[in-house]
Length: 287
Length: 177
Image 1: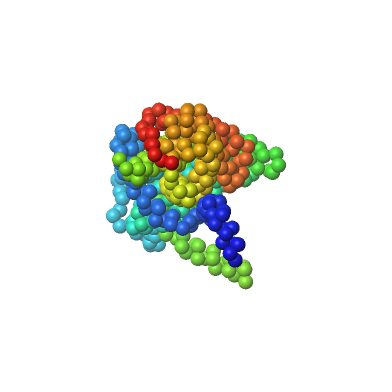
Image 2: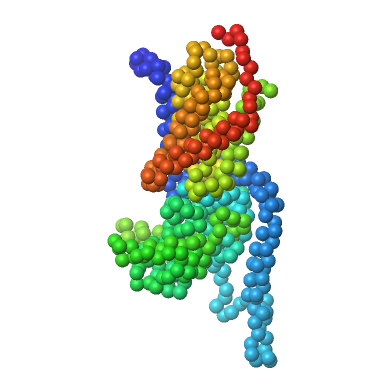
């Protein structure tokens, strides 16, 4: 027994070093797709508040650009109100009714919640975006995030009281299901190979789909995270994969990841219901 | 000002500069210069080894929390802090000379050349361990060797610039033996 203590004392330094290395590597290994590392939510609050202060200065320097983007968005929204449409018959005019109720009733499925981006990264292998909105403002995990032009940014992986961490598309673990806009039979997944920011890979697309350079790729709406039709990117290059019957498509992302300012987090009111049903089906299959 | 205050300021300043200035520079796709481990290089000689490793772990963990990357920087910083005493022992020309100055710098290590070897080797270690862990995780093995070399060169350049900008006055202490 004494020998053990003597051994520990002789090699105390080295053993301490090994201990710290093991702790670090344990932290790394514990991080899977939905990283639940110890103390991460607490650190999130701290780094989030520091990021917020930095962002105030950064914001000020970008006001002109932001104004132009906001104007464009306003224009688009104004144009889509029903008051702008007239029918050829001058005896009637279409207006937005103040009580949107028909015999079936209206149930809201998607809610857009605006949030400000306080921190962004594009240079690492796993990139995260931090938003200035958290559980105190009705944000939740696993909600999709888009930018003001409906371009996909990522999925929320972690929320604390006032900040949310979004796993952006530029992440090794991110997978979004997508389809070609003009050929809905061509569906696949969006991944990132870790090489260039702003360029994504669209894989598992069958060669029977018609895909050429310049086509738009949108979200399919199959998963409850994103509604159908959110922009992901435009095709830059189509190469047939020799080994499978699929294309490997290189996409230029629609969202400019270098310069993210505002984001909308999309809440799906039916997601819980869908997830519960799926759980039930899975347990039935397993029994 | 006292050593403690000076070191705390260095810690905070280096992390802030690293994250808010250097991480935002998109030099080449994936090459980011790292300067925050200067804190470990400049720690006073007489801190105990355990304390050195603990401080390095804290430094790495802070940067990790900012970047939301799990344990990469903590592991790399702890490695640097562990190898530091060995390197210093080899590079300081005489026995007991490290009691004459307070912290490693060009003057206290007896010339510019040993200091550059010290900084260069530790930077190389830090970067290779960091990128090695990343490459293991993500499988881009060939990338990592080129990335290590390029990043080390750039970080060394930055350390050189920082050394010129912030020359630390080192008083020669007598009666230390």
